[in-house]
Image (cartoon, rainbow, N blue to C red; front, side, top):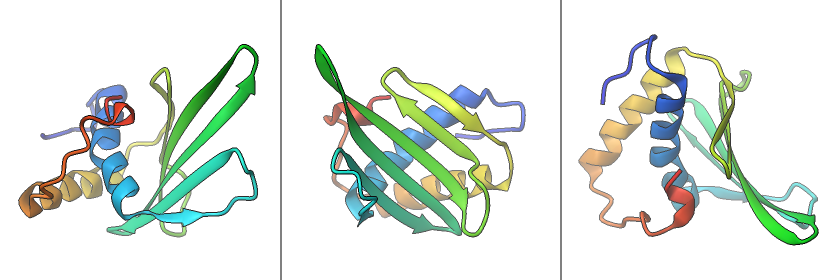
Length: 125
């Protein structure tokens, strides 16, 4: 899939989440952030840091699970932050990182991971 500067931010964010969430969940390193209600995984690839955080909101009457995916270049500022449910682009700064994510998509499709996590509802954002 090709993206340009004029690409819809939501379209690219959904593409990135669909690609990156399974990778982070498969290969990410668990992080301890000191909050027992939060689970975080971090993965560094192609000079970018991907962090998936999942936490439970303990508000009555339901216990809702929220998911965040953040991306930033190593040593840089956050370029993408997405939350769900519902799907929401919290922040998006276009730039070279988009090319790195697109290149990663080509690498993962060529590698043929063989394992699909499409049955995971979090992957269908």
